[in-house]
Amino acid sequence: MPRAGQKMTAEQRARCSAAQKARGPQGPQPGRWKPDASYVAKHLRIRTARGHARDYLCDGCCGGRAQEWARRHDRSGDHPEDYVPLCRSCHNEYDHELLAAGARMTHAIRRGELPFQ
Image 1 (cartoon, rainbow, N blue to C red):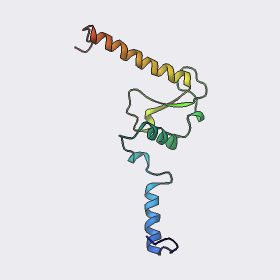
Image 2: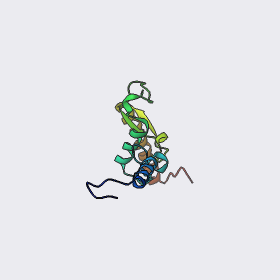
Image 3: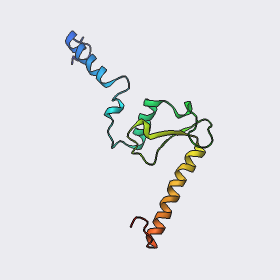
Image 4: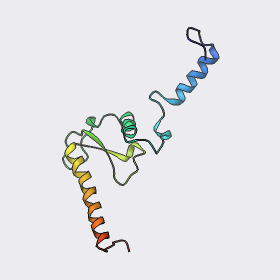
């Protein structure tokens, strides 16, 4: 790479252009996402891939305007399809159902009622 104030050669420009095209306009493309990304990184990726949740209708019971991306609990969150647009109310209800199911499972295990024996 040339130093500040120096012009790039045609070969350097071509190499940089090819590298930029490989990265795409917004950085790495979804097929190259790393699965161990943080919560914030995954939500930024979904917004890059699918836009804002507010541009969709809620996939929950209300059918109103969505406000948040919610990860489907049966998925890893590593792909854009792993998220659904939900309003806050439906998102809270969706997460509460998971927490309640987990609590029921914990209590059953403590009582010795293992459902998976």
